[in-house]
Length: 133
Image (cartoon, rainbow, N blue to C red; front, side, top):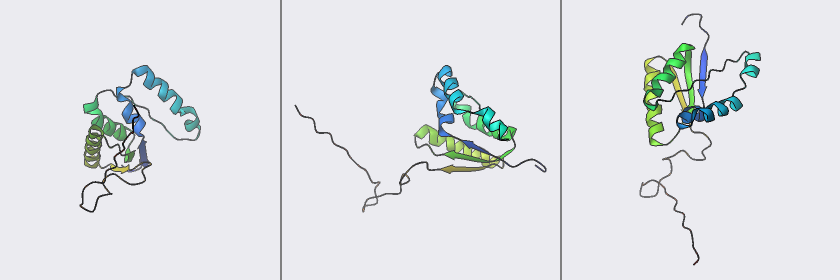
């Protein structure tokens, strides 16, 4: 990659989570969230990509990163099972292609799994609702 600019891509959870939304809703959301012209004036490229097939999303993300010669990927961790599997696959594919993936805990006071009881079990909070007859 001699002479190629160092590019980092930041993927927001909203971009990856919109796959199940109707196309017009996605398009409308992206139009309000992507000030492409303003960013272009600041010489900041913005790439928007829609992909509807969940199983091939990790390879699509990696091909997008490769198409812009990205060397890093920044993303927030999503904790749902399918999303964790997707992110693990993205990490493995990125490493194979020489891209450095960096995933972060977003807006959490305590990362999941860090709190445990004296018995070593995961800490749980139960909420009970009192209902009057």
